[in-house]
Image (cartoon, rainbow, N blue to C red; front, side, top):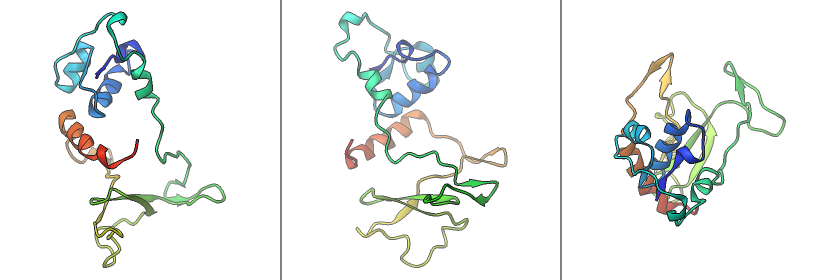
Length: 162
């Protein structure tokens, strides 16, 4: 499956959409510059009459969102949320064995957890899923190449019902 991002989105955001389509499982991207951005060969484009899976791109970019919320939970370190919502920062943990996830109150030094608290009911261990990339205007680590991220994503997909 090839992403034809330039046909469905504004050219300014096309490189990021094409990168994410590739990481998420598309076999290639059509636009030369977008392919260069991710270090792949462009797949080129074709007439609409030859596209057998026409409309799939829209389905991909409009896929359902899983457990997504943009509620304000904290401002400048002070817990703040609507009534009935869990205020303050949270950590999202994922089990490395069964891929179950859970949300817990954020603790700065979570690595020093209570004995057994990082264990899932399946026997696997929970690990942080949200890792800071930028802190204090400093980039903390190099982002992996799109190919490495894609491989990581594709290894996990069989464990989820989509």
